[in-house]
Length: 242
Ligand SMILES: NC(=O)c1ccc[n+]([C@@H]2O[C@H](COP(=O)([O-])OP(=O)(O)OC[C@H]3O[C@@H](n4cnc5c(N)ncnc54)[C@H](OP(=O)(O)O)[C@@H]3O)[C@@H](O)[C@H]2O)c1
Image (tube, rainbow, N blue to C red; front, side):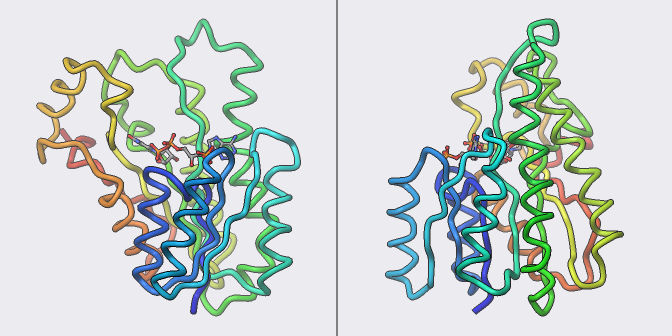
């Protein structure tokens, strides 16, 4: 069976990606930081369905977190077929309120961690027959969709990850394909007022917010699309072209 590592793979979008990959035939390493009980339950669910699965804890806000995760994976598996860089930090903060500390901790999780983790796992990815990296970015990188959302430090990290997607696709091919999925609004009820949400939906051609499963489907597609590399697939109901 091919093996996938999903960072932040225990909850919300990450959990949907983990389940969809397992359904598509992948064994899965489920990385988690705080959601360890959800990760344990998900791993049990996958094992009950006949997959090999295990939990790998790591905190990407610490300097050694990404490398500790890579080491856990390398110790158990000689090769890795798919790395999904999904884990991310997110907060609303006006530009003038973003301190150096907030900027650095945001970039540590959303940029440095996928960079260092992917780098540390290169030998494992190169040991696979046809490996693939999927970075989860954000459609708002190309088109911020609401003026009330202040998160420029978050967008900076996601924009850089999208550029890394293209840089790595050039540098790591033909052995490793690298693509990104850029979700639009997915399960945003907690982060928006009803008025903001209605405004977003009015401007979205498909008139609904995305589900974690919508994002997961795109990840499975890219993981199994042998002639696609260096691309960003926007899963946003068409909001980016509206
Ligand atoms: N939801 C949306 O509308 C939306 C839109 C565009 C892009 N995205 C992107 O899609 C991905 C998933 O979104 P989501 O809404 O499911 O995110 P979420 O609910 O905020 O989950 C974030 C995940 O990242 C992990 N994480 C956070 N800080 C971490 C740290 N310091 N070290 C290690 N792991 C950490 C969390 O792990 P634990 O829970 O184990 O701590 C969790 O699994 C993210 O990359 C996000 O930026 C989401």
